[in-house]
Length: 219
Image 1: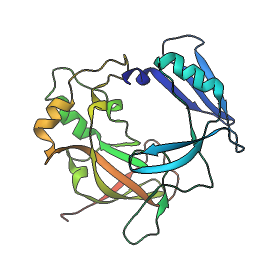
Image 2 (image 1 turned 90 degrees about the vertical axis):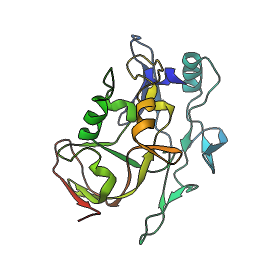
Image 3 (image 1 turned 45 degrees about the vertical axis):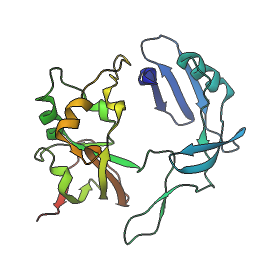
């Protein structure tokens, strides 16, 4: 649903504020609640977990804007239905993230991609958690380790891209780029890669502007 790009979520101390970009006053607040609400079965790829609906009001608000019946769901804190594994480490819980909890992109890789496009794209097309600078284009493909601020991460796999990157986050409109160009330059078999999936092997505080230390596979 490309129109979801026009919905914004802001995390506050007491809950989640959902708003519609460009619509003054169009928002709904979802309070934090550990008691939960109605339960429903949720499937994320091949994983099935039991989640709860924290706000009937939010369900109505989202359904009105997306023009179809949808429900906002929250993962129950005591139910670990999804995990990811790091070689040499115990399995870790994974919430509703696509595959992994963190996604990293190099600014130089985006800059290189934009030289091939008639209209440059914003990094928000790729929804990364971390954008690093100073590396060579696509050097993140060869990462063996990465430290940012007080945290350390392990690269797990290249991030497989889908048609979501063709949705302009400013307008919610869907086009053909940049996936068409990436298909010609970043295809590996039947998959198109851009960026790296990473997991935390040492938790710590990360802030904008922190130094980044990387290890490379070919060193």
